[in-house]
Image (cartoon, rainbow, N blue to C red; front, side, top):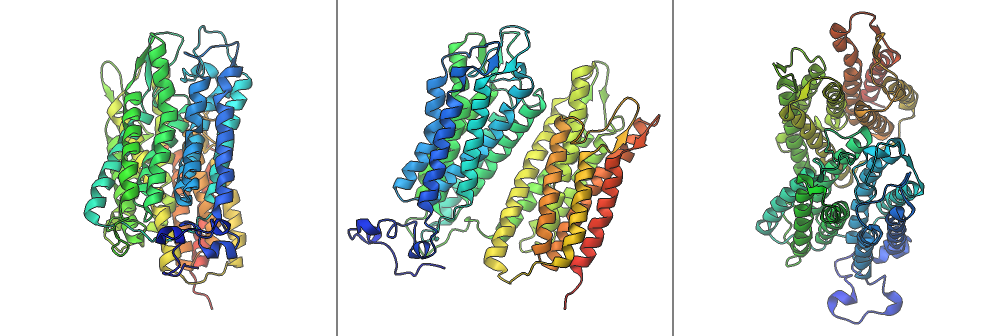
Length: 591
């Protein structure tokens, strides 16, 4: 229910507000919020308190020690970690005090996304603490095996609490209306470009190593040399930064834009400043490229949050041309990011990724590059039509099929990095980085596509949808086959078993997990979607499952002796058939 034009509050009109009606008269809480009992301020205060408690738990982790035997950090890090950890909570409380629930919610959501990425990376402490590159937590002093201690559980519990706070904030509607859209497109477009430029610097800060080490016992690895959990956390952070920045600066609510950028700034401070202090405190730690890019990005986000929050307060009647909730504009952006990611995947498959001192190993010798090449071509084919404004037909298919690129890219990176680490083969950085950037762009395209679909449903297509009970049985059957397809190997040889979620976790497992979650989410949406949209989602699922099955026969030429198809292959084929049959049922006209 929208507020009436004449229902602005006494604070906005210059009158003295009634203390008993303070929440009702705030610019972020309409009277409808109180009629329906949906005032967001109490729930957001609880979320902010959870962030505060999570920060205390994580910040005190070095005090109890994160490993046994003890490996002290580079400096007394408890006080800086506590201060930096509570900054997002303080920012959220500050916005709530000013009755800016949208800005506070944006801070909390960004904080939760960053906490999820950092928590995945910190889980390395449970597997092999010695490979953890967090000098504010520990500096290894010998080759003695390390085990997680009390501080590790405090650290992970803190990240989990912060993530739960973000879930609470996500489920809390702010009740705000777009009363102050951007004033002029001329003032908005430069800000949009500047924010995205600093977002790219943030990505550049998340991927390479933040520091270099002269101590042989202290690891300092970037993305390509990182263990699987650290790899997944860094890659997720590299996706979160541009997505959060883009959604913030393109929001129709200037206060939401300000909150998103402030959230990015304070959270990047939490990832970079502790490393900077370690570099300054320990002479054997040197400044790294990742740290430099990260510091510049956080300063840029902090500075740009001021003009982004002011943009549009001059005019209520003139909407911004760049303000995105416009599903056609977001669809074009989805197509551009998807096409660029697909093109980079094609380039990554065609350029060498491994070499020996005598020669390079090209496409014809690395069988694992063929699925990546096909994935890039398919993504290009689905993304290019979206560049034409108003043509959104391929978007539902791309909304699921984009998972083929992380699936194949992770398998490629797993193979390449394994060979480079265990043989005399060396990495060719250009090809490997093309693969990484293609995955980041593809994930950003997926988020833009999801937001475009949600906006289209809420603001354009207002028709009622009745859940289809007839689609439930085949959808559930497809889901069971999907879990088996990604959980079990697709082929076996006497010396090698292909990756699956149930037989060890490596870099390839991140691609499997991403594809599994994307397909399962699409299947959940099928019974509550319109016929054509449900069929398109199922078509995207069939594409992803086809690529999962293709990994087996494409590997056969290199592994012919003792080669056999695994349960994952047959499950993937069965899931393709089930998805196709369900798509036909969904596309049938009703009534």
